[in-house]
Image (tube, rainbow, N blue to C red; front, side, top):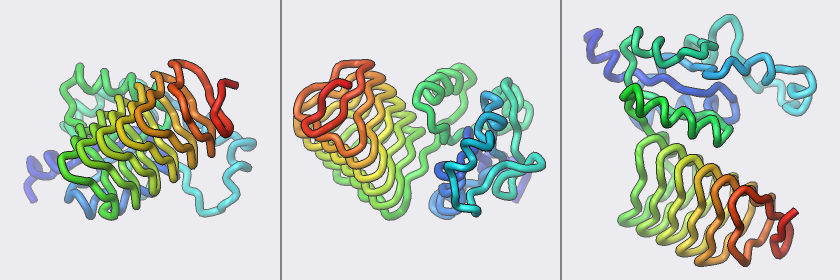
Length: 236
């Protein structure tokens, strides 16, 4: 493979959490034919991520952390001016796997300013129904279902076995945890976060930056910037 073709095939992953970036590595390359060239800690947060009290919350000893400037056998860079570094390396493709929604939203703008190409990671077991529209820069994990004519905007994370029903609109950088279910004609605002197992009935709107707690049953709209939890879900 020529050097030019190799660089055209190379992807920089923004993010290094083993529960997101780590688990995506192998199936992403097999599914897309692209190669992960390096991982980037875009806001120099590695020390915070590796604090002992946080490590204790991850009891599985096989949880991987970057070490010796490597992660998953690839180079690992902790650098604030990552866009300039990618330009220097000639890498134009970016996969957004930063768990924090607001951080991902900022990165989207930076990618647009620098002209980076957003790539998506869609697990081969995910089901994408007819006429669903998925923008570049989306992550969809195993067993998820994206319904008929649903619209998924850039920066969205959809986790294991989440169900996004027909005609949903998921705005940029919102996040659905495992087993979330949204019925038909639901809109999820920018950077909203629906935690594990939340259920949203049809024709409801979850506002920008809103949080829906795990196991909540949402029967009414959730205004922007608020947290709702419980059955039925109420502001907390």
